[in-house]
Length: 259
Length: 345
Image (cartoon, rainbow over all chains, first blue to last red):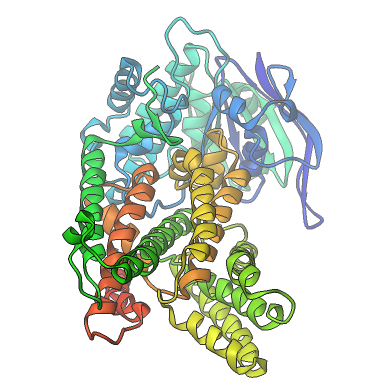
């Protein structure tokens, strides 16, 4: 069970954005994508989420070609948090989170939605913001609200065994250090519950310590795709980021510093 | 499950405060309608009409002139308010108004073209009953589609960009109307000035009915996607990832806006600022979700327009002010206030 791409390539105005990428988001695993700005990370996420189509190649959700899955059905399989735009009208935090509840109208008055939303708001530590206007929040708080929305989209009864995937584009941006770690721990827990997770990250330490797989993209090509420790062994970070790194591994904890 | 729908609208998205507000809007509208029915430049008692103690002339004035006129004001008020709310939601821009961004001007241009070129081909009845509303709807539709192209599919490009595009489109439309004015005959010219000024005079039942039909269809076309319009506020990619067919949603909203603006401009000419002011008032009262904003705008828009028309026809009796003058007098300061508010935020 996984979301995977088969030789996807993307061109924009004859400029190649992505070339020949095979990548797999496995159930219960965290895959982090690293790479310099403009390498094509977000484009790759957008292709995997079905927001844009690649020129060549296919994306499969649990072995079904995404072209055969309707936009509505996709929403039940994966949720996405991209780099968000401002919201002009005064929606409350609760309104925004509720937008992730897909069975709109029907189950709203059952107890499920209330419990689910209160649970997620508590998990994300934004319960105290529930009635606040979204557009008055700070950048980091807005980020956590959107994260809560993408969690609500994947919320299921505990006996439900559907495949679920989460795709997050720089989820830790604007977050303070403590919330970054809390978010990564929540993701780890979700992965243990069987959710497949794709992240785009810039923080190497978060990526190497919390991910099961790392994919490094440079100039639209898959530069490396392996387990974190193998990537460290191969000493390829310097080729990608053109910086000199000092890597310590103590008790399986990876610590990357640039010199 | 607990799904409450009335006329295709899913009421489960309304909070109790919103339901109460809508009920109050409705009561206010009924009250205003009674006042509007019983007041006018020709004075007679509403109660004696109900008792049947009126002359033939009084009844004719009431049923053939006053009632159609008040209903027209209702329709135009609610149409403009609905289209304003729709366009604001679609563009994710609180300053979108059919007048400001050129949609009304497009409708007026469409209407003007059919008046100047159609009057030689079609009979007056066919022309003004059917062709005018259709031409106006096409005109407003073309402008919205043009905006669609110029803003790259209504992408969020800042509040001012769209207004600037609107200024340009308004200018283009007025050039078109100007040229038509120049080549038109005297009788056609009288028709054209009516459109650019905005008026509720000279309405009759046969003119009213096709417009009622268009507006009701447009409303039911829109009502199933109001929740989707809320979710669109997150951004297009986000809405798509939440399972919304954004392309279809846009077409529905474009159709509704074009039809409502077209139908109202065809009947009453260009009346400004209603589409801007009303949805904002509605949002300030009880919230921003579109299920509430659209119904609230329809009700409050009707009320405000009926009041504006009542003022227009009673302030300087027996003469009549252009109703567009009154709505602009109220709307333009409000517009300034909004700009300052947005600028501060």
